[in-house]
Length: 416
Image 1 (cartoon, rainbow, N blue to C red):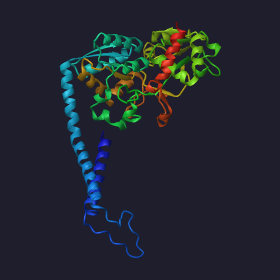
Image 2 (cartoon, helix red, strand yellow):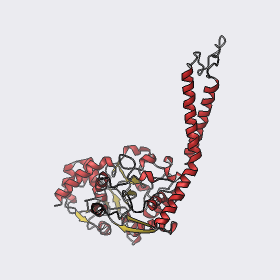
Image 3 (cartoon, rainbow, N blue to C red):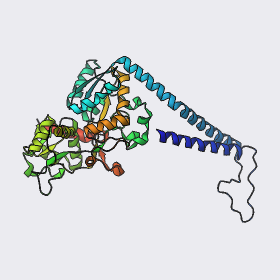
Image 4 (cartoon, rainbow, N blue to C red):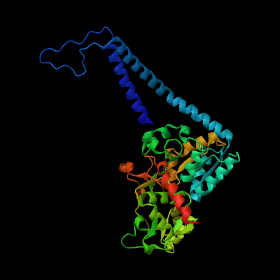
């Protein structure tokens, strides 16, 4: 925010100078500058033609308008956001409750529960649920005129965007208050870049890393092509692949990315000829990967590695397969339900989790990379090439939804 304020002050100075020039040098009645003496060069800014009075007045008024507007903004900004913030905190404390859905695993739960330490007057209720289970439940509740959830911490997928199309998602961008959150300079891709929907208002992502479609056990899978997603349909991998439930979440995002890169025939062959074993428990998924029972896996959440390591597991031989250049936020995002039961506590939590301090602690714990520039990278192996970010495709963005939708249709056909 400091950088933004500095730019604002510089602009105001330039406008003041411009207005002084307009008021003095070109004021009505001012003489036309004399022609330079022989051999002298006429200044580039000099004008030998007197401007009509209405143009002079128009320019002066434009300069005054912008100067007044910028001065007002600069003066009001600190007090306005602070007043809004204090009112939000007071109202949130009065609501006294927050009901959210969050990623599975104790680490995420523990980190999100630190909000209650920061704001002890607000009781935080967390239910771990996957997208495939959460959104159908929300739709049924909304049909029954029930509003039980405030928001979800997790990644969007085709189901999420369907709920958005129903008008059941609130614009989270309107809830941002803190200067350090609104400062576009602190985010990779700017403030617009943290939103995954086309409107740049609804689906916010605070994590940013390369999408890992598939992993393999390098102690058991070797040789040419072993490290490439495009070769997953090779007959030699038949019966050696596990896959997280592809109806939603990370495996559906992965399926959409593979469909976009390699086509429908590839996805159909992968799901039929290769006979992947569908698994719902990430712990089972990584156990099978590490033990070699299923030495290739698709759509496994990154938190599975963290928890497996904490259980004493060895992940040294597990490698990611090279695939389409895709970035993801994983489960590091927020979707707010329209008309949440605790709107002020919701707004408070969202600003809290996007601060530098909280992002630093959270990313360290869950081993992800934040989208904030001022938060250290936690996993350099999965860091995107920030200088070439515009060359990536966001796997969970709205522009990818046609591919996810088609992938979901194919998956339903072949998994019946």
